[in-house]
Amino acid sequence: MAGQGLDSTDNITDSERPAAALPETMQAMVTVGHGGLDKLVWHEDWPRPEPGPGQVLVRVGACGLNNTDVNTRSGWYSKAVSGATAGDGYDDVDTEDPSWGGAPVTFPRIQGADACGEIVAVGDGVEAGRIGQRVITDNWLRDPDDPLDKNKTGYFGSECDGGFAQFTVMPSSNALAVDSGYSDAELATFSCSYSTAEGMLTRAAVTDADTVLVPGASGGVGGALVQLAKRRGARVIAMASDAKHEAVAALGGPGRGPDRILGRNPVNLRAAVGDERVTVVADVVGGDYWPTLIDILERGGRYTCSGAIAGPIVSLDLRTLYLRDLTFTGSTVIDPEVMGNLVRYIEAGEIKPALAATYPLRQLREAQTAFVAKEHTGNIVVLPWD
Image (tube, rainbow, N blue to C red):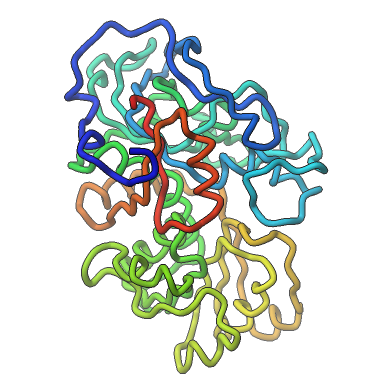
């Protein structure tokens, strides 16, 4: 049922469905331009893609939601926009820089980066033995001849069509085989949120000697930061609204949640933290509260950021930065090994999905409305085969 979380039908993996000839068309939610939710247009007979050389065709079992999809559709990435992430479009979007990479997006576009499914066909140069593999996406599209050049990267569902459809194509190298008992809906929570979080922690070089403060810990990336920082042995202080503390405490399962949970924006953060020495702030929130987060950092501390859902324009006293020997890192394009590591963590049971709700793909507008409202804890996923 829409918005009610996982039910028994979600546990059916693609490999368990009856084999059938591939249809020529498919159901898909197509983004037709920058703007509000009306830019998401449902199609019953969109042409099914064919895999080209080096590509695979994936039958999508589930696709997770993330801020990138909302921000690209709404145009939030444009430097002309200064407000918080929102589901509606903005009137002042510049057409030159409306995407994560600062370049125009081609429409119509099928968005959706966090796909889980089964490979059902392969293009030239791909081993036929990949057919039948269960996969999740590595969302970063890299130049195979220069994979470390961040200027040559694209994003699945942004620079190419993604997973908000019954079928999608991607480079074979971006379809990562995964051996897991999790449902498609559960596996669809990992690709964006957890790779973003692991990329942030990698860039900040978090170890078991750190105490990590995580604002927005109830969100997809925030919850992933909690789990992945704990996996590294760090002490974790989570921040979330009081109504979500129970769910945040349960992240990762018994004994794997945050060490402490504070309110979303304590009036006196220093007093709330007490004697704790915060060495890392891992932030995707930003907004007006941001200077308070910076002030809490220990001398020599690190701030790492991969989002600004509460607003991108913040105030910084440069004396705080240099007199306290702080290090700031932005994190978007993750290191190539991050997704492979995440698959290992999943298969070893070292991280757990946080599935908040599922919706039929045809109800993507409702799903994104709930996603932007942020009343949930974890990730929201859409199912194309309702």
